Length: 357
Image (cartoon, rainbow, N blue to C red):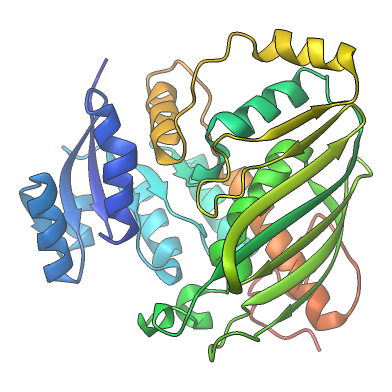
């Protein structure tokens, strides 16, 4: 099994990628370089993990043929140019969410992927953990039956000190607020389990902090399956929770309430009757633990690169999540229900920051 060399670009959340994603798979990955404009932060991370190569030059990493993977953990406003450049350099690419700031930009990336030597894996680490993976197995086995309704709640807390970081809270650099930076995780989890949305009505507002972007939002979805879903999120909750409750014909699922690891057990899995319970027990009776967050996503990424598994998260997945964001913004501006898919005819396709009124 070959060890893949990794360069981390951005030592903020990049540190979590090292701790949770790469160190648990030291037989699969080796972080050989780090890059950050904040040299003090870069030095701290380099010293902590014994990474000798440190640079402020992204271009230097792209020109290095000994680096297999560029892991992009920079502010969202520069993801597009960095992803496209890394793909053009022949690298495999890992990119933190949000992948970018418009559907047009995602489509630019997807076009670049078609001729790239390497592959892109966006980050959606909340898909991993025993709870969500058991639910996914039960649903995929056909046991859950027809989806009825769901509610998804991202109730987090962000105070002014969080927005003291210069790029946060601004349309130009963070690209959005609670929908883009925080609730995107749970909304991806919803669609991972219940499929894509067909129509969206949403509202957004800035009510908690003195920032440009939204910190409260709600939306009503009609899913392609016919199920109804309500989404609500705020950055003003005095108790932080992340919660999904999904109602199917034969099973109700409720996630753990841990704000940053909702994929972990305990999940409630409530069967409609004893027969359904027996079916569930047969499907998950041989369960092997699934490590949460980056640990499993990075492990599955290596399995893909080795030809043993599908790519765990694709650009298509990232586009679906950002399409939902685009539709909510468009609906909030226009006051109208928005059908999906969202294409180039949408006033928000090229830039969801553009006003539709």
